[in-house]
Image (tube, rainbow, N blue to C red; front, side):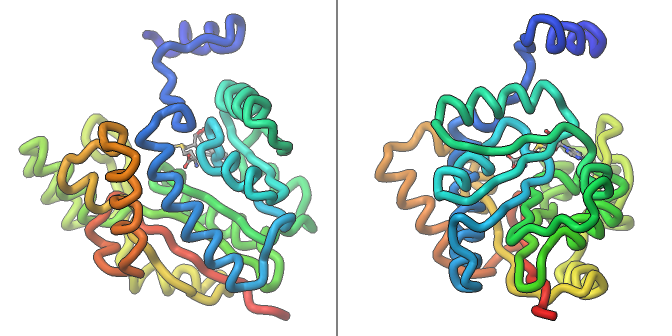
Length: 264
Ligand SMILES: C[S@@+](CC[C@H](N)C(=O)[O-])C[C@H]1O[C@@H](n2cnc3c(N)ncnc32)[C@H](O)[C@@H]1O
């Protein structure tokens, strides 16, 4: 469907058959539980408990922000997409949770309210899409209160390499090996960082590195579809994903970094 037609349908008829609603997708909802559990555990260990405040940058349809609201956090979701915000509002209403949603570029939203600080700032599966990821990370770090957490997912090099090899696209694999940022197949943008680079990046923002975790290793690598598993099998997969702390983070679909702003 053409972009303009989609835009009009979304705005006027609140309809887009091509929209990928990550909240409604059973697999994405499964992977969301990995993010939520890792972040919840870190928050609890840092003494950050509901009703602490949580900002999600790029909340889309609410796959993360709604589970956090269910846990009792006071959540704010920001997204540039008006259509995504309408979806998340519907999902939040159906889930019976309270939440605040703001439309806009998260950097601009934070710039408008420079004193605002959150106990937890989450940004999952957003930065890998943006050539301005360093600026965005800088803005997000600035919104974390002293003692608070910044939890951000990044894509590892291995992900891009494997996806290129799966398509027999050796030229792209070669380009990914040479450069950690650039166009990735069909002109989509990519960026990846080594753990050393990520540690340096978070350190430069005045944050203390807590941990990095793989998000989706086994399903992605094996081609396993969590939505086709029985409840028991899905629970076993979740346990396996969560059991090994940082093991194999670089061989996963995403790497979740948890960092903390030191107390003043
Ligand atoms: C792949 S989705 C990730 C959704 C969600 N974080 C999750 O994990 O379920 C990326 C979302 O980020 C939003 N986004 C991208 N850049 C943004 C920005 N600068 N400010 C706010 N939202 C942004 C997009 O509109 C999209 O809804």
